[in-house]
Image (tube, rainbow, N blue to C red; front, side, top):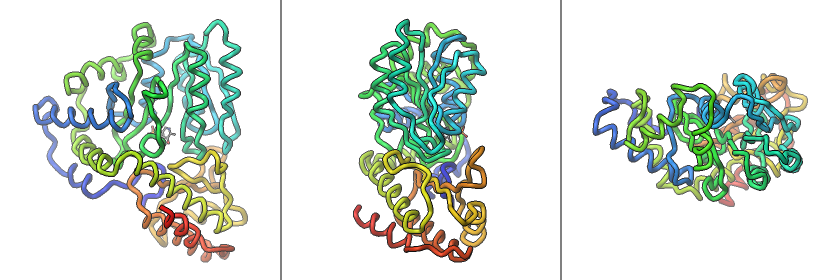
Length: 377
Ligand SMILES: *Cc1c(COP(=O)(O)O)cnc(C)c1O
């Protein structure tokens, strides 16, 4: 049972759809699948622009954003309050961008006022892009994308590039309405699919920047993907079986509806957090900025790695550990994608039993706290 923030569980219907011989990616039959999935991806991303699917992990989509819309020497403002934000700063440096970071402690949200200050001070409009991680999976913090984006819009020149890898499909992001310029995600997160596809979409403003951007690119040249998408095709051989699965997963998401999907993630986030509080397990991210995809816990008086080990050995439930300096100190429980109320209760009751086994019995019932919240719908 996968309770990690990616890969996430995949419905049997999707697995079965993929259990077929591949078909030719230039066939009419496959072109029909691309047409359908492209339309449904636009629905999911709440955009009129094409959502480009690349055979890459989530990181590939943000790297693509950096190399398609920027040029060497461009100044970028990168929000770093966890592992992924730090990665986007590293990639930007690797490509010779002039990187300015806005930092917050791991576990704290980025402060939108810091972006306001940096952008207001940039009167000669040297900042070409602001890169932020919406749901920072390494800490379980949900950054305030709407507020930061407002400051970027006031600046006027900079593009906003968003890592929505664990927020797309779990949290409402009205991409076109907010004027998000570039947004990337990955199939193994909120899409009920295995790893292998990255998704990225760009605004008209970003495509105008593409025309002038000079960083070298070839496989990740998004112009190639956009042109092919217009012809219900792909520039290179796509993972065709993943497309079979994606067709079914997107149909399932449409049947559930965006509002219901977001409400389910909110309910699971709140139930999980209520349970952790009842179990006496300290939460790493504040209630006001908690990711709908992942809950990070820093246990006190009981070893995080022992918790993960008992959960895995006795209950076959996989939890994620901490990353970088939080390794060994933290466990993270994913509740992203194909997750139902039963999964939450199951994971919480196993966690309660694990604490008991480790001689650290909980002060109150996590199951009762979670089920109270789940019952409220
Ligand atoms: C998973 C994840 C990524 C991408 O990781 P890949 O291993 O490249 O798919 C990027 N950002 C966030 C916030 C993530 O959770």
